[in-house]
Amino acid sequence: MKYKGGCHCGAIKFEVDAPDTVTCQNCNCSICTKSGYLHLIVPASRFKLLQGENNLTTYTFDTAEARHKFCKICGIKSFYIPRSNPDGYDVNVHCIEPQPEKIIVQQFDGKNWESHAHELSHLSKDD
Image (cartoon, rainbow, N blue to C red; front, side, top):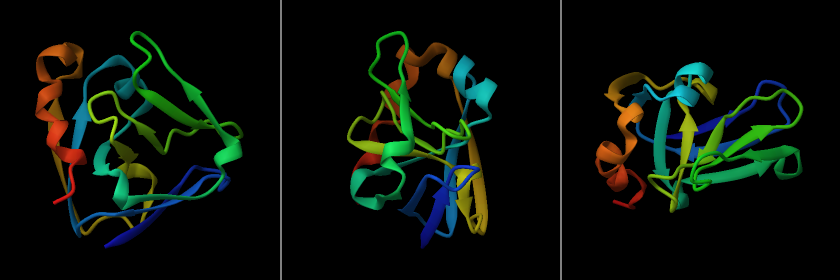
């Protein structure tokens, strides 16, 4: 299924191909918990930015490998390039429409990222 997505103000728009039933991760690290991010990691081939590249700003911290993309206008992080999957995109399920028919949420221990990152690496590989 092709989902439309974007930020709150509409400056950022994208498409993402994902199944009707989406399996995503709820990470307990500080940035994900504070922002309420629900992770859907996809291969780069299944993500397309349609609008707003000039309205994106990037935030990095710690190793600076993850490139957190925020809308400069409304501040929403609707997608980013994750450290665990630099060859893919991580889309916030809360930012896609229509919402998937079924959402399966898996808990991910991002507080102990170094020990668990390998559990995500397969998500950005094309099937």
